[in-house]
Image (tube, rainbow, N blue to C red):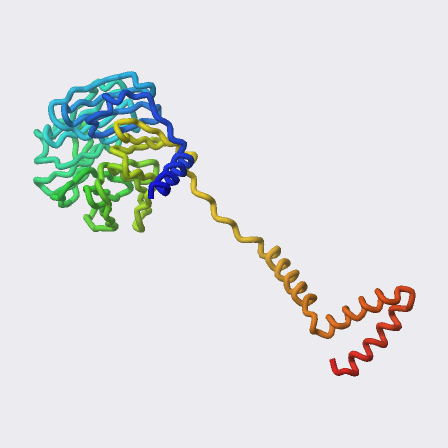
Length: 325
């Protein structure tokens, strides 16, 4: 068993080109969540003191926020405007590349109780209002409601929502569910320790505690990264990241490409190959008349090279025919 574990470790490292990053262990200790942007910057959220800290790829601190209540960091894909939602404070903050607050949207004065919020872009939010059981599309720039849809927001262990192309993605700790805007369930699949969504163009990913899954529309969830020993995992467009044993590791996506299936041979080439095989099979039959004739010809030529091979061949052919072959 130990040998198998060692072999698995070697294969895993060779496939993913593991690289330890220079981030102090003390900075990773007690981290509740970790996110990485496409510039290699890392964002660490600690639930113990509600701190949110940004580091560059060398471990140098760029910015830090000390929050008073728990916040959920939605995404850092746009480091110039990072959204954070607090169910306790009933608000959403937007912070810049140095984690300075640039805008705050207060839901208390305009809505009932917002269970979860999703920032679609720099103007629109999608809000799950638990008091009215509605999904609200809200333009926070001009403070207007664009649309409102009946939607039961009373979902146990709700972790995240995402709205894309008229579909509502709901993530809990144990399930992913996809609905239409009419609250019709289109897809459901079990998972473990769901944490948040990540959208990369048209692809929807699910980040869990130790794995990353890709949604195949209305078919299945495919695991694209997994490490049972990881405490936290995340990815950007170039790499996977994980915290394991309070150390940060990076894995290159280029070493995780799937092998391409072999293509079918050209029909003409395939037909030619079949004809050659049939011809070879036909020549290889020693008990046929043609086979015996060929064998006899070779014997005649080897015994009497000076004699007329044609005459002897005719005579022996007559003998073979007389024998009833």
